[in-house]
Length: 413
Image (cartoon, rainbow, N blue to C red; front, side, top):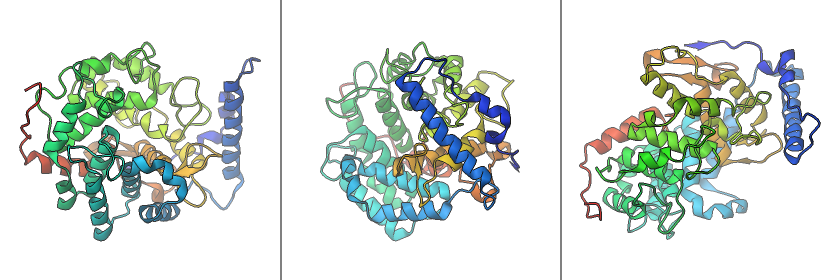
């Protein structure tokens, strides 16, 4: 059930004690942090004195129009994302999904046909038609197709060739390169695990050694870096943890250290999350960091930590919602990194995803909602592992479980 929230956290007098103090040591980082806090404070203060808006409002219709326009036409400024066109499909479709906006059959079919042209003859998806296969757009394309969830969408995915592609980028130690002869990092392990588990193409050898490689990327901070020895980072940490959940091996990580690291990434003044220690708040980490907490909650509960709350995730859910609603909404639609930044589809997707995580705890009979503002701000839930609707995950998994795992010849067979 939803519960009414208390007056906004940001307007309690003691909250301003949480502002950054440079201790008389001025650095580039401290100057930038103070500037961001001033912008955030201005956004909060502007809301407080605007008597026309007694509660934060999610500008649904403006976001919908921005997303709907992006499905059909993009400005020339998006030419730099020519190798990320399946990502644009996913970001927009998932944002619409969270807002509860249905996609008409004609548009869905058009997107299916476009993604089919992005699929490579040797398996996997490229960043656009005719481009080489890459795990990142493969993940985005499969997610987008599962969001649509039609027979046409599922039929686009060539599962046998997809499995061949995954084996072609698999390394002997269990890691994966993003593309043939490309870079290795934790993103690739997650992308491979995500698409393989959704489409039922996991074989006994595909992820042999991968869990061990992922845990080698957890460093002394408690978070996960891109490769062993690298600084902990929110995006990599989410990818590593989500991959371990798919492998059902999350207990191999140091969960307490991971919890300590991620909870310390929520900014005490802003309410949003930073991606790394000593960095600025960024709206996209509303999902990459906050999305970790449901996964950690589940893992710790499975480990017998009975003292866990059964109504709240282990972060300040109201504070994150306030940051997104008051600091990350563009007045004409779309969401952004922080005040002063431009809107884009990436931040729109992950700000809304984080807002959804912050609103919904648990599921089924254990569902508990905390909605800042009125009921019109409620978003649809998102699956914390795949970041698409939970029902779309279940539908895709059930569809592909009816199909046998492809048998292909590999060096591991």
